[in-house]
Image (cartoon, rainbow, N blue to C red):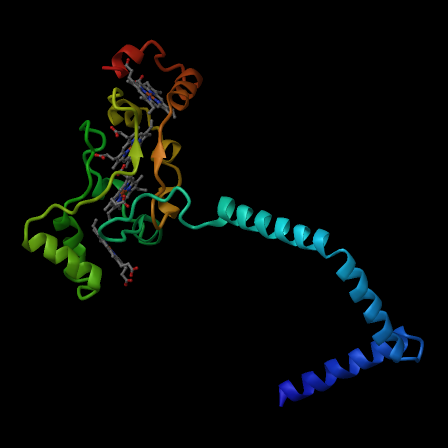
Length: 209
Ligand code: HEC
Ligand code: HEC
Ligand code: HEC
Ligand code: HEC
């Protein structure tokens, strides 16, 4: 019924527009259309190029700004979401990364830790069943690395966390990420903050082991 009414409405508006627009001589619209078509035909080369350029530009912009997998980290064995766990459910970073201020290798949580919760929460979710498989076969979850520094840099979290530098200032908005983005730290980034905070700059001997 709504469709019928809308169609009649649109047809009435179109008819009225044509009649008013052509000063009461509707056939003018047809001859006008012919001329427009001729003009289009004469310039079709330019038009095709313009259209193609537009399409390429839009695709490029989309790829550059919106393509969802831009810089995405490699796919993880279990699609773990920080946004859900540390954002929505507000689980503390230290619960899963407890060694971050103590060890050179903060590491990632063992599957037992996931199962502390997931033995009860959504226990039959296919991804959680995958966790059980890892657990039962004693396979460490093959998480893939996301944040990288050059090989010759030995980075230690300890001093930074003691100075209460937030995780976010180096890792970005982890709490808002469903899937993390691959990131390579550049030396300039380290030095910039060290300069700002009057942290040692002569440490590059210490960093570059
Ligand atoms: C001053 C910058 C900085 C801050 C602050 C920082 N991180 Fe890092 N983080 C790094 C760098 C650099 C690496 C890569 C180290 C490497 O590959 O050796 C890293 C790596 C990691 C890793 C992976 C470690 C591994 O074993 O693969 C985890 C987990 C991590 N950080 C968690 C945290 C948490 C949680 C916090 C906040 C409590 C935090 N980070 C604060 C710079 C930082
Ligand atoms: C402190 C408790 C807790 C821990 C620890 C925990 N989770 Fe969760 N997880 C949750 C809650 C709560 C949900 C939301 C369940 C729901 O949708 O009702 C969830 C949901 C999930 C989901 C489903 C997401 C979806 O898209 O439906 C996956 C997969 C998951 N967690 C994986 C993990 C992995 C892997 C670990 C270990 C690294 C882990 N969880 C550790 C509490 C936890
Ligand atoms: C419920 C457990 C859990 C919580 C809470 C959690 N993480 Fe993680 N984190 C993981 C798991 C599992 C991975 C590996 C999968 C991935 O990279 O998405 C990971 C990966 C990371 C990495 C990438 C390490 C690498 O491979 O280079 C960083 C950095 C990190 N977490 C920081 C944080 C910060 C900061 C918080 C608090 C805002 C936090 N995490 C809270 C479980 C957790
Ligand atoms: C957001 C600020 C910030 C960033 C980013 C940062 N640092 Fe630091 N860093 C500090 C501060 C502040 C100290 C001094 C801590 C202290 O005085 O105990 C420090 C200390 C250090 C030390 C110890 C120096 C010594 O003499 O023992 C090393 C090594 C270091 N940082 C390496 C790095 C590297 C490598 C990166 C880049 C991946 C980095 N930092 C990024 C703020 C930062």
